[in-house]
Length: 269
Image (cartoon, rainbow, N blue to C red; front, side, top):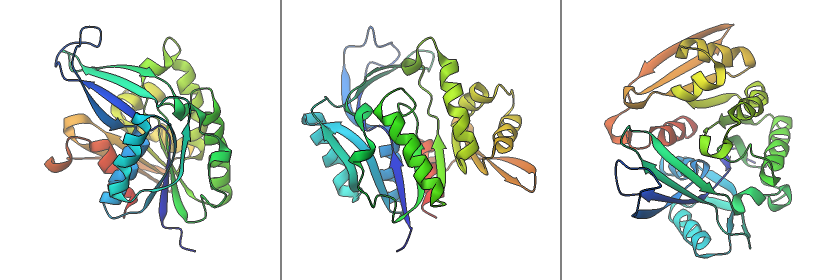
């Protein structure tokens, strides 16, 4: 059997995006419904880039869950790992504030309940890479247990592991250190890590991208990709004990969601 599929696991949710630009959620009045969840976005982008993705996630037996499933179908995502629950679909609300920062809040729902038993027995049989999106995946609950079991199974099969911390302070409240603590074991297991430069500094405590990537390489990561906003993305590769970091501009066409499409570009090759 060919192992040419990329399995993505994590949240799929509804993003309610505030269309009142420059204000926070407290004062926002108008919202646009969009399909969201970084692992689902990566799966879609992989297929649109010529790859083959499958998605493991859980949504509610409600109109929002129906909407999300209909969003996936045109891109022929393998949905054998998608489960439904009587718990409502997870919702996220986001606003772009006047300082350019995003204001997030989450109403956690069905994604938290994805259990190992929800995945088909042959889920990994045709998979060459497993991508773990960690926005909600490292929070306590059934999904966290499933993450760890899937990581163990993938490692036993010598499947490439990809990890995106995707830190959201709205999920971790007053305990961001717990997020850092839970990420560290993944850096020892992952072959590929995708971070923003803000996350890299937050997770490693280093002041430069070069030093941050070097720390991840020392933990065991082979390839680090760092999104750097309008400046593009950086790539760092560990080889023979050395680390190189190179900043490259993103093509204008993919500026809207560089992280998702950058991952898709890497994984579909």
